[in-house]
Image (cartoon, rainbow, N blue to C red; front, side):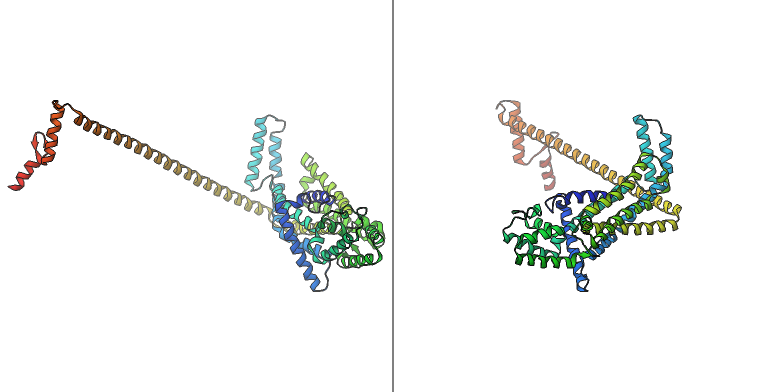
Length: 444
């Protein structure tokens, strides 16, 4: 599935005029492509330092390195696939239980029971898709980095830039050789077009240029071929063009054959007896893909440049070897113990999730109580302020009444008495002068 999506993306971009077109220009993928280009450059420098600098060898080592980095994800994906094959009888039993029941309630109940089975074993229906989704940006970026070899490797970039400069200064129109060699096309696209020129394209350019410039281009082209030839093949050419050229180019047919056979073998190694014997729609689709993908791989490896075909063939071959090792380890494994451990992990995960939910619920409850307490405090404070306000209003009203009372009224006379007592330091309680009595007692 990964190779199918990657191939579709690569094939679409391969026909595009812009070398950075489509998904290769997406933000995250673009950064990964830059990083992969840096790795490719240093792998080449290492091999060149020991005297075997070759782009084909760099591609194979780089492919192996990427496979190694993605190994944990691959193993996890294989474990999920193995668990899913083990629980298929239980899934089948549930499907038989609800067979013929097409009402929404029955369909929901069936889906719920199947989901519980997957949860019990610590896997899910989408586990394989999740692993594929994680790997996809890396694989697409890898494919993009290999397409941009003439831009990221100095050993290719320098002679290609020199050729582009000669063609630009000649003042001739080379758009008949390649559309990306037309006037006004940016340098990156012109370099990619020069790198992928067929043998006939190189001959056409040499025939159009004056003899001196044609000789310079031929010399620079030989520098490119010195590092770009692998097993007698120019890896910038498509296997189809190399085969048409005859001679040692016929060897190029090996790459599409290796890619197709290894794709088919990888599918067979991952296929279980149950899925092979099953006649349901999902298994039928999987079996159809298992036959269609190898043929698709052969077609793409014939039509893409040999460098990309080399990556694809090497990747598929490494996948077969890895699948054989994984299958061998599963045969030695106690599957009952394997299932038991995974179920224990699933239970532990469920308990952690429950504890987390309880904690979250507790925090929400505490937060609710605190919020309620704060609300009550605000209400009390508001009521207190209201009472104080009323009290102040009453006092002010009382004072105002005292002040505004009629001089001959009882209120006015009471106010005058109260004021006099205050001035004398006397307080009247139950008809007695309390402070005066205290003073006399002190004098005694």
